[in-house]
Image (tube, rainbow, N blue to C red; front, top):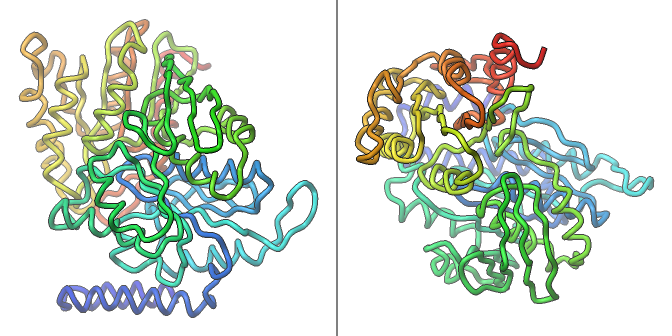
Length: 446
């Protein structure tokens, strides 16, 4: 059935007006839900949406609920979980196509799981990372949302949504029928989502007053300690992740599970032993005297947050390797370049999922912003502290080769992914594997 719909879409999409394309998405979603007999009915569905932080937040929620002996299934950009087992999402899609999505839910619903050694009847909770594309294309039709969670809304996907206002409005649709709405009170768009929500609202915030708050923060290189303040009490959390954005993710997860009866003690224990997500602030260590960090950051907001999180966490230079995705929002490309030019000591612009665009054109658009964004006392000069290297492996090799003791090599954009989209082909590429191989050539990790 899935192959039939894909083939049909490829043939007729160029001939269809926008309203017909929208209708075809709707029909496809209806057909998928009906084919699998609405498997999400009767499950408690927690939908996590936002520009950044969705994957980490979804994994936190799933791990906390599992620790509470709940039967949980989860779908995210990085991984899927069923009954405490995690396996990679290799589709390069956050919310997968409706037929694959409904099939997964059906499997999670019917397959037996084990909780404390006893066999159960499958998942009770479904944690679903949900994009604006998935909402607009009706991919989640037939899935009753019990709780909607907002991480943040920033500049992204303006290639698909005509304006930021439309992008934001698409996400608010998720909140209209949810029984619970979890909203980031620090986000400038918080009031928009509060107005759209019809259920019980819980707010969270690091910088503002909210129902769930973080106070007395103590930031270290690889972790953050803070006081978690909630309507049911307070507790100190030693989160094994750096950055205020990860504190915000933890607050979102806390706000999501408290309405389902999770205790503060269990919340503390799980967050303090959180299993980090691949490609999200992932440190790669093979004996080298400098730090290598891999992250999925690919938006201006994510760049700003990761720079803020890393500030003061290294003694040497920051060497940043990144690019931008083809066939996506072009307006953010020079912004990414400008942010790197301002914050990194050495900037290396390279290839990153060009899809059907000319890779060099994408690279050039990113590179245009680097010199403009640089500070006057630290200008970026091509060939000195600013490089353009089309081949991503060569770009990584250059960064690792020039890194000295106490430097930080930051690789963003690919994160957990194992392929690079070139044209219509998925070419094998793993940032982690490339780093390991290149460091071995330099004499580390033998």
